Image (tube, protein in one colour):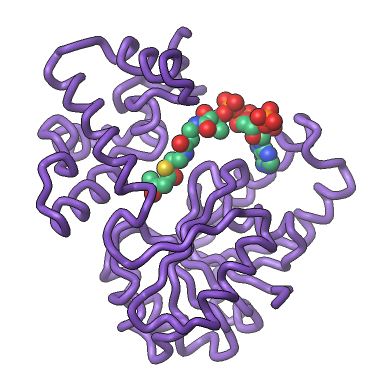
Amino acid sequence: MQVGSAAVVGAGFMGSGIAESAARAGCRVVVHEPERPPLERSRDKVHRSVEKAVKAGKLDDGAAGELLGRLSWSTDLDELSGAEVVMEAVIEDPKVKGKLFQRLDRALPDARILATNTSSIPIAEVASWTARRDRVVGLHFFSPVPVMKLVEVVRGIDTSDDVLREAEAFAHQIGKQPIRTKDRSGFIVNMLLVPYLMSGIRMYEDGFASREDIDKGMKLGCGHPMGPLELADFIGLDVMYAIGQSLYEEFKRPDFAPPPLLKRMVVSGHFGRKSGRGFYEYETAPAKVAA
Ligand code: CAA
């Protein structure tokens, strides 16, 4: 199956990146949010990201223009009606996602794949909000989406074999490598990544080492592009907290549980890069940890 037309619901960092990747691969993509300001911010994000790709020699000017020409941003849900694949990337709130999937199910009768980018809500629960449980699948992308090659394809309890195969083919079509995972909290990557990041936060909370040394340790000692505290700031501490809670709730293992400091930071609005303050402070550009 070659997808010609896709929709992305949710115009944040993830949604914008997913839209850019799909448009780069030749899909026409409509990005939807009910309000105009997040759509304007999404348009700016994608333009900046595409400019960066051109400067880095990843795209020529012609291809960049075509990519942008395939994208549109709309507050009108009806404009998504021709989409063959819809990918939801809104906040991790079951109430918000529940209402949205009920609406998408009604508004997009022709969509062959109803995908969610959730990292903590069961695919089975998302499917239960629709009348097409066999068509619901997890497509879990990694940030920054235009750069990261992976997509976890998550099979819900009622996802059909055809939809699973179509979702994998679509991942390949948009230049990603799919890996198949069952529907349990954390899937493959967060199940491994979250205990590591929580350990980094606990180490810092205990006063065992400085934030810079913890991050430098993993960058220079293990070749990671970011240390655990930088990466937690990059993912978003609110997101980290939600994923840790969801893993802990599912498996009751202490290594998944968010440390007390993380909760204090989140309730104080210290969400990491996006709020300007997390384990590091961010002014105009993200803080760099000296190598
Ligand atoms: N399209 C295509 N390529 C692009 C691009 C675009 N729009 N924008 C940048 N690139 C390319 C660059 O040209 C560069 O390519 P080369 O390596 O060939 O030079 C590469 O992408 C990275 O470039 P950047 O300029 O962005 O800069 P950087 O070197 O500072 O890297 C980073 C930034 C990619 C974020 C890197 O620090 C990194 O990999 N960090 C770790 C990110 C990570 O672990 N993400 C997963 C988080 S977990 C998650 O998302 C899931 C969850 O549920 C929590």
